Image 1 (cartoon, helix red, strand yellow):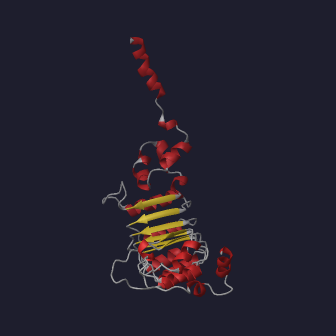
Image 2: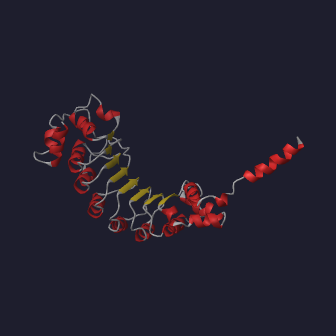
Image 3: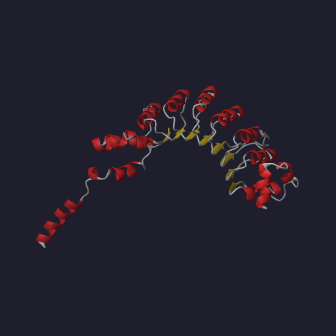
Length: 289
């Protein structure tokens, strides 16, 4: 028994893995599961090997930082931290999400060093001026996905995006309207329809648009595969318009109250008005039938 117990611990020690000898591919996979703050403030400070991996530009193709993230505190300059992450990407950044603290200066810094950027997600960023946003968008011609949450977006902003981001495939706006009665405004929907014809995915959550705005979107964005109009309380989808959306859009998200039987909206002629004779959309719709 004594000899067995003596061998046991020794064997266990020999079998203990040396984390520093793990293949870089496996280490990168593990580090890829950490958020940006954890990689900069924790993992990169452990040893030289981990620091080397954390400095690899491949680790910074995707950056996701918000001021409520684990590892952030009031005493740390989160804007400086974000700039550090952008620098580490060495121009390879393709996807960045910023929550709660982006400014004109930071947005300029990101854009000037990220010519390959394909996805930009900003939420609760109240310190970006219209001029700063327009300047940045004009330099992001490779952008394919754009998302805003709790940020005011104007018709002029939509026009700038449409004119300068020809490869845009996904556009998401999240802004809940709480006031009652709900104000009606189709300006944003019409601007999207007129300036973003190549969209495949659109979320316009909580907008003030009416059925007319939705018709404009279906007309102007014929390639839509997914559409999210939840919390758009001015929409009434109990008639043919709702059925048309369900038929044309593979992933159509809406509130159940928008299709209630007691609404008084009459859209019997929606299909005729929405698709003028001879249009490309009209032909595709007839082919589906």
